[in-house]
Length: 183
Image (cartoon, rainbow, N blue to C red; front, top):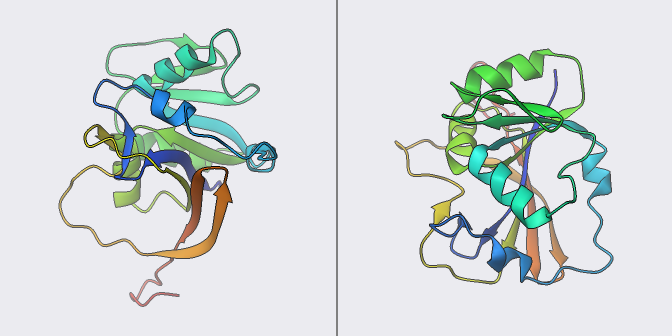
């Protein structure tokens, strides 16, 4: 069964973007010149994101293709049909991810969309998270983890790395046995 990863950046106060979906604050954050995401990208063949993340990433990338050679699944309430190397989908993210997990392939990368991430976490469908924290406070915006009814999810800290001005934490979901204790 395929694994599901979240890999993305947030502000120090937990926002994915400003309230108007602006990501310039992130692009203004210096990375380590030696930083290379290719080892992570080699593990995945499908990228899942919300339409807002898709459009903003396309806009900031200009003519350069985003996530080349990866299938793109873009959640949208209004768009239908194909994207470059992928498709628009609507409906329940849990059903879509469960379908993708059952198919042959490499890991699935959830890039953005706080609503998508929160829903998948609630249903124990994200296996690992790589969260880069930028040293900037936005004060308001769109959160990575949206408010929801209380749900306790525990993760194991795998690593903490410095990537230029970003701090990256790598977390792995702790599995529970059928009887309940953490294994």
